[in-house]
Image (tube, rainbow, N blue to C red; front, side):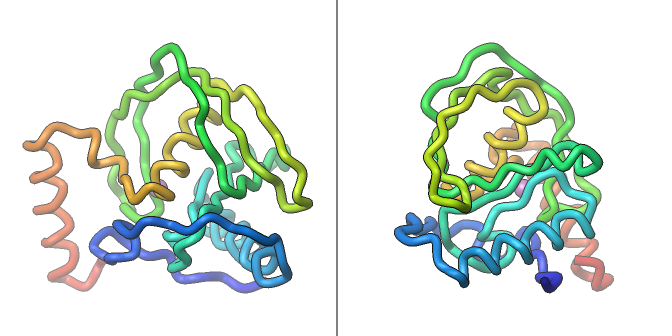
Length: 168
Ligand code: NI
């Protein structure tokens, strides 16, 4: 396993469309191992492949690492959603930035796991939120896209400052 570099906002890969995974081979399995290690070391609850520089439809979610509740989602697809959950959200590509984002509270999501098994599960609450956030990454969408323009501008300014002092 190896710790991967997490791409921060501003890196063009975060705005690139991803490709469907056609075969779950060794490189994919190794990538998942590295992504898990990277996510746990960064104390994140989710990570998508583009965030480590890989434009593939793959993401991982673990809202409670103590419980080993990890989910590896290959080619995930959110089929439907209901209810509303608006809580503070962060992203490993936006260190130190947390904002309220409104998402579905309950979703039906379809994906393939690392063994190639197909699943269709209902997720609720924080897991549902994390899955929606990660699947967005696969569609080149970022959580700041949900914020009002003035708030996005404020964040951009803050990031610019951080970049200037080499913190981004
Ligand atoms: Ni994120």
